[in-house]
Structures are given as C-alpha cells and as structure tokens.
Image (cartoon, rainbow, N blue to C red; front, side):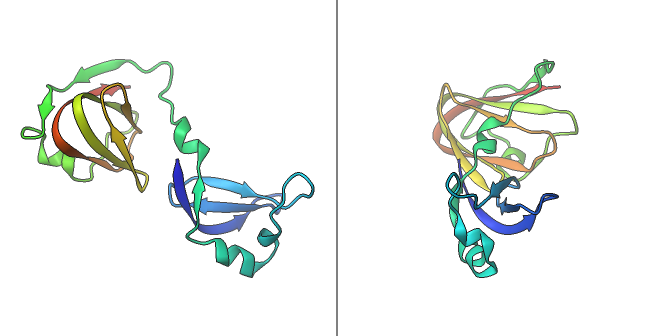
Length: 148
C-alpha cells in the first residue's frame, strides 16, 4: 500500500526511521553495498523526502487476532439505506474488530489516511478504535460483521 513520508526520527541504535502518514514507521538505512540511501545521512536529504510516496508493507499486514469470534452482524445495507454514521468518521470500541463485507457493487473504505476500493471478495478489516468511514460507489450491498 502506498503512503507518504511525514517525518523522521532516530531509533535506539541511532538508525533513521521514516514516519509515515499511515502511522507506521519504516527504517531508512545507508549501509553499502546492501542498502544504498546516502540521502538519509543528511538533514537536507531527509527533508527532500518529506511528502514522497513510499510503499508500506505493514498496512497490508493488518490481521485480526486468531482468537476473535464474530458476535454481531448488521443487516445488509444498500447505497440508499447505508446509515449516515457509517459514511462519517467513526470508531469501533476497544477490542472490537469489524469486517466490511461487500456483497455486490463497490465502496470506498477510508482508514489510516488511505482509500481502499472494496468489491465482492475483498473484505475491509477495521481495527479497534481506528477512525474510518465508507463511501458507496453507486449501487452497493454491504454488511458489517463485529468480532472480538
């Protein structure tokens, strides 16, 4: 998943870590010949990378705990019946995960400063207490499962 660099800090070993708009961090090391990032060694080089797009593999690895169980499911919503609360930023409770399940059509799932297009066969995973919202893309049928 693509995100952007919003800042830098050094870790305990004094290696540089890029702070990403998705709220993850990614080490940026210059260790020739294996890792070639001479720009990270200067303040000017780091400043030039601010706002640059970068892939965040951690965003692709959001995983619900294996022990989680579904405890509740909404009715199926359409683009006309989807509640306004789901279209605006909201959060699940602590320890509550959710799965956005598109049955037909498509919608956008907004989370971590990113937009994911969901269609049948693609589930949106909602982390506990993480702000998010959805936007229907025309005709859609979708339900939400709640897990803990």
